[in-house]
Structures are given as structure tokens and as C-alpha cells.
Image 1 (cartoon, rainbow, N blue to C red):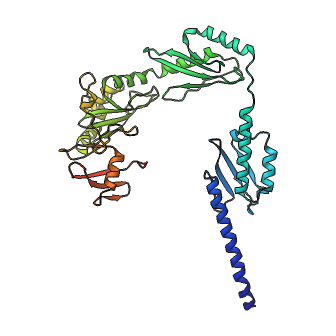
Image 2: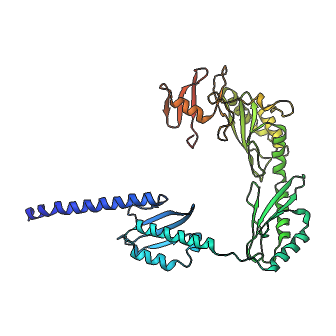
Image 3: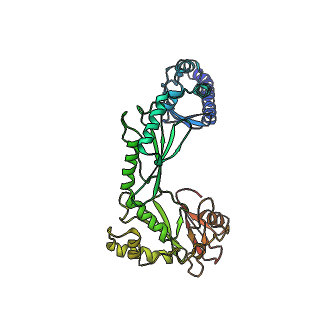
Length: 397
């Protein structure tokens, strides 16, 4: 019995190994063809991810039985994918029944999706009925033609303007759908908070504009705070802030700056603060902030509160130029690099040279004397040769 078993086991092992190699090869092919579709468990009975076609990604989930046979599998599609494949369900089901493995099915599903997308693009789009245009013109007239900034030839995209109580002009882009006004339009605004329109089939452009005005009024205090900062200080980032931007990086002088994140709903409250610069410059500022935080008065402007608790005056736009306190990177000799500005400064008070994080990272990596511990790199300053430390942010530069 033992001898007989000994002769059979090697053959069984060879077949098992062959099966495992074949499965591994299929999985590797699936990963190459569908890199965005990944197994969600060890048994590889659940796959989730995206299928790509014509430059677009569509979410899907595939549930396989324990024997991994596709004929008993379930395909769960996102509503976008389900809408595009509407009318092709029988074809998809047939391919699932006859495909030998998941990779083959995914390739055939991609072909079906390509055809469905192509046919969808070629379908003629019927124009709305005449009353659609006449009712829109009536709505614009009732709202006031002076509030209209733009309308496309198909009357599907309309831009309206409004002023807040401080005289700032704001725009709202209204994307009308084919079933308007039965179907709610999409509204696009430059706000620091989300904006959604309350809509009924009886609503109109007038109701959109009135809700837009109410939202502007609720954000007036926020924009007053941000405008004062933009007008009275040197903002290093963002260079051209939008109305939706809640962060400002403000120059403090001595190659130091403070990054603040303002709460749009409570703009005069203490914002999130992060000091950037050499330790000998920013550490005293952090101590002052902690020591004087009790002085923060929400009745005062945010800028005035920052001056009071930090015991400083910000470099004024009326007196100084940006070049007076902004320094080019000591490695690439540029100020802007892929949208980033030099934000790492040598701690040596006799040096104080600034660098882009990515420039200093590449420099230190090239030095034999540099060493790294977790996300911190230790090396020497390219200018003064004194010790310099670079703490990497969450993303690799």
C-alpha cells in the first residue's frame, strides 16, 4: 500500500503544482489587463474596483462562488455602469455563463462597454420643446436680465451674478437638465462650504438666486476676514486665492511664515495654525501663541487677534515688497517649483537659507554622510554645512 501510494503522490503533486502555476498566471494576466480590479479576500471570491473604457473608470464588484465558476457569479455595477449597459444585460449574462475565467470575462465586458459607450455617443440628442425656452426667458426676465452673465446656445448652462453686503460679486453656474423644472438643476459655486439648492417642480431661477443670496449673506463674515488678510499682509500661498479657499500662508519675516486654516462658519475664532521656518524663529512664536491664547477675542478681527497673541506686526503690503522676505530655493534657485515655494529653512541663525522640500530631499539623498530614520533625514546644509533635518510630509516629494 505504501509503495503504491508513493508512486501516485508525485503525479498528484505535479498536477497540483501545474494547477497553481496556471492560476497564478491567470491572476497575473488579470492584474495586467485590469489593474484597478483587486481581490478583497484570500479566497479570491470577491473582486472590487474599476473597469476602464474610453478614458473613463466605472466601479463594479464581482462575487464568485467557492468553486470560482463564473456561471454562478454575481456582477454588481455602479449606477453609471448600469445605465450605460442598459440593453446589454442579456449579452453580459451570456458572456458570464460561457467565459472560462474572470480575466476572459473582464476582457469581453470591456469590449461590450466600449460598444455601449460608442453607441450612446452616436444617439441623437433631441432638443427640448419650445416651451422650455420660452419659460426660461420668462424666468430670466422676472429675475432681471442684469443678473445674467452667460447663457449657452442650448440654454442648458446659465451663469448668474449677485453681490454680497460688502459689494463683492459672486457667480453661480446653473446646469439645467432635459426635464427642467421637474428635475433639479446642478449648481456650481465658489464657496468654502457645500451649497445645495432646495428644489421642487415649481421652483425656478428666481428661487435659485434667492438661495444663492442667502448663502452669500451667511458667508459674508468669512470673506471679510479673508479679504483683510489678503489686503493687509503678504500671502505667500495660495498666490491667487479663490473665494472657496480657507487657508492662507502669511509671511512673518525672517524667512518664517504662518499657515492658517479658517473655519468658514466661525471665521473670527482661533484658526488652525502651523508655523514654518527655522526653529530659532518659530519656536518663540509658538510659545507666545500658547501663552497669550486667552487674549483671543472673537469680537475682534482674526488679523488683529493674531497680532495680539503673537505680539508681532505682519509685514505690510504698503511698505514692503514680496522680494523683501521671500527667498529663492538655495538649490534650484527658483521660488516656485511645481506650485510649491521654499518652506524648509536651515536652523543655523547665521545661515537661514530656505529650500524646497523636494530639492533638499534629493540633495540629502545624494550625500554619503546623510542618514534616515523613519520619515526624518539627517544631513548637512548645502550652504553652511551645519546639521540640517528634513521631516518628510505624508506624501513623498
